[in-house]
Length: 216
Image 1 (tube, rainbow, N blue to C red):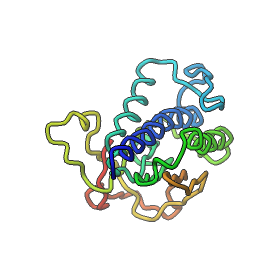
Image 2 (image 1 turned 90 degrees about the vertical axis):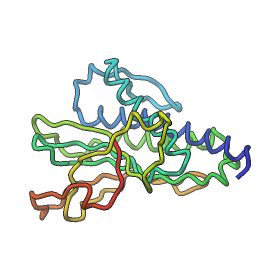
Image 3 (image 1 turned 180 degrees about the horizontal axis):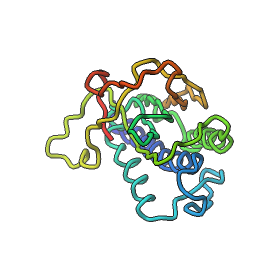
Image 4 (image 1 turned 120 degrees about the vertical axis):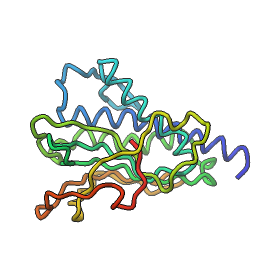
């Protein structure tokens, strides 16, 4: 991969994390986790989206999204999940973004084309209220990234915003609801919902038994 390809790949990754910041905010708004007054309408990619008013909420989402940038650039990120938990710290719903970026074809796509493709995900999210489950009392949420391999951070500060997660895993395969997918170059992206199966036992497994490197 030459320098031009590297620069183009970085631009694609930058557009993706910018999109992720907006999409995560829309998911939290969609779930009704906070009062609607905690958000304000904005326009992004010519779509009406939501922006968090509270500085701490806005900064958390921004830091989570842009903290992924170096890992996405290196092709380490397999999935990004917005996970909602019950009071007992059990996952009750997961919004999953599964992504792959092909650096060798990044130079072949115009930014406007990429934005047009990502725009369709935001439009779909805005009309997906019927797909989500009601939130339990005293719930919480977090953003979790699932990596293809553990990063070699070393002395770099790029991993300081992310820590290993202790999120529990469902023992049985989840119920999956597709929301939107993009299968193109240089980006392949899938958005889907995961809910626990009706036969899911209460004794969930810890991440170290799930054989998936994760950070949050």
